[in-house]
Length: 178
Image (cartoon, rainbow, N blue to C red; front, side):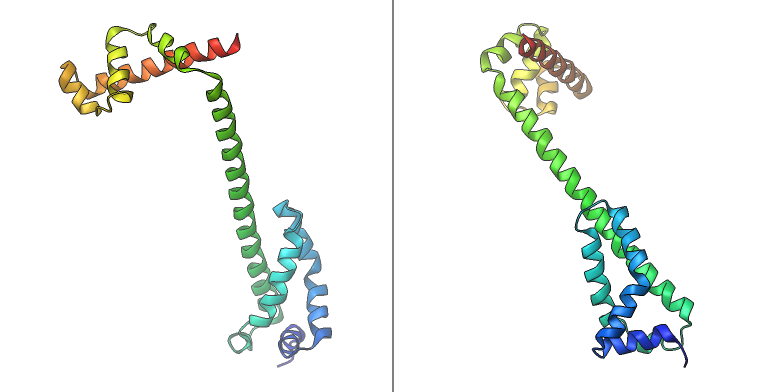
């Protein structure tokens, strides 16, 4: 078989550093392109490391009858799949970081309010809303238990709870702005 790329892969797997270097040079533009897509400083380095490990692990017996184009496509798809995995990791990391920031903002704003603010905001609620909030958060009743106690539907309990929480939030936010 007279396939230059297959021969380079075979030589690289046998420890030929020049063949490994030539393989890298053949795919360096693609590696740079994929590195830019990930938008991470270390992405290109990660892709290079993957590429070097990948060419050592390729099962050449399965690819010995492959054409030059098929080998290029195989390597391209492998690099592309690895790049997608890096993008997923990067996005997950960004989401985790934004969740941490959001949690910190929430806790920072929550710390500004005192219990007296919360209790005074209960005064703005209707009698049934106040009862539902106290039953849920103070006495740990379930929605179904409150519905039976008040002789109303679970849906009505949930609707009143939502309205009450919105009213409390609105009251606390306006107090926090002062």
